[in-house]
Length: 110
Length: 118
Image (tube, rainbow over all chains, first blue to last red; front, top):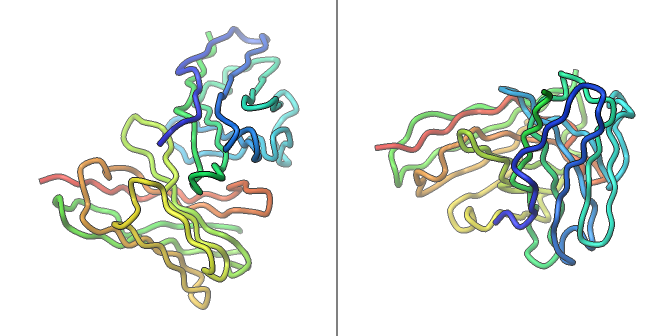
């Protein structure tokens, strides 16, 4: 069911900027909001970005989201060790009437 | 404090049924769409179902259609997932999540584990 494609892994050193991509199609990313969740080991996911590029209160401005056409990206600047987590993109698919999640990207801070 | 607490998970055999519950507190439950999301061990997130505030719209993930039924009782501030004909592939942590107007799942429970094994 997962038709949102994310790279399985990403890495960076402290202070670096990392981007995670999420590729979909016209029926999901192309026509609906993209959201991003962060999941730390052993915990429930946490909302990171909503409506493509908005941050909930409490989420540092080091995290930013963008969308262009049928792709979206999550950027993390000033990478910190506590950013080491799994990141998931998600969007509603208007053709299938289902919510899709990407396969997740495991971010490692070297 | 806004909180969601799942319960009802456990070990069942293939073909058996299980009913999960999600108890909400700290907010006006009847105003929100609720969702179930699951995560198989070592795997990614998979959306299971969505039910609007008055249950007028209900949606399911493809692999759940026909086997899972979602419901809610606004008087009890609770949300349920009835799972029938369970299979090994249904083994996962099941999370309930509150959805706000922007489609964001802003509050999550800690999850309840379902293991399907003979």
